[in-house]
Length: 346
Image 1 (spheres, rainbow, N blue to C red):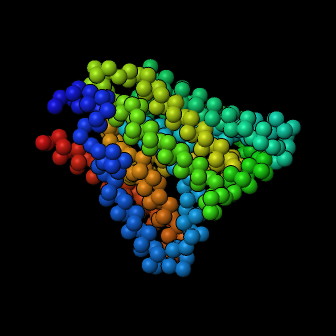
Image 2 (cartoon, one colour):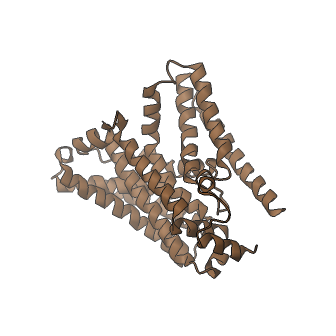
């Protein structure tokens, strides 16, 4: 089957010969899931009374919620054979715009603001993130500038703009009701509200990627952009939409972070872009495009989180976490390259 026919099969809704289950799990996800399970099992055996507790897993879920939302957007980008280095800076910028908006609307006393002000702040965060996504998408899809260069530039620009908005310091005045409700609030049997938001966004992302035409086009563009174009896909428009989606999710992540930390916490997010890329790739999404799954990304997000939590509980230096995550990341890329070579040799 030629590349164009393979793409046409995807566009028509068949996803080749893959079942829905295969699409959700992905070709590279099974082994990385085993790694995650093995890590959890090891830490439970070593410290059953500390690691194997409901509180520990609840904390893990909360700590990964913001990164998971970023990584869902990154999954779409990398499947198209692109990259987005700016998501961490866009998150910071969106949180800063949200915080400054709520401050302005509440006369400088955002702590006492109500849900009306919070709603406007959310809209401001989402719009500011989406605008950066639009800028990335236009420069990449329309101006044809490589994604690495574009997002490297907007990474610095968004971070600089965030600093300018508040003279280089964090916004620390956040509505108390937002922090107590979304940041630390729980519902449905003690599940943190922040986690529920991340789960809903992840499920929507999985549905969008694995069951809709938008998802089929995403895989098609990443597999072979020229063949996708010949099959009738508007590649330029689709890439623009993908980067818009990533900016939109970065805006939501910025709002979630603001709710949790009750501050913009600029320094805490400077490596979020690399963490999102690492999690997505560790979850089996190919840097070469055309392969990936949201479930794999979820697993990839939890591997470094479990390592960090486990090393802290077992009193192992955090530096070993960096080494372990780096090893898993390199192994994931090696596995992907090996799989591609085997497929191309057939």
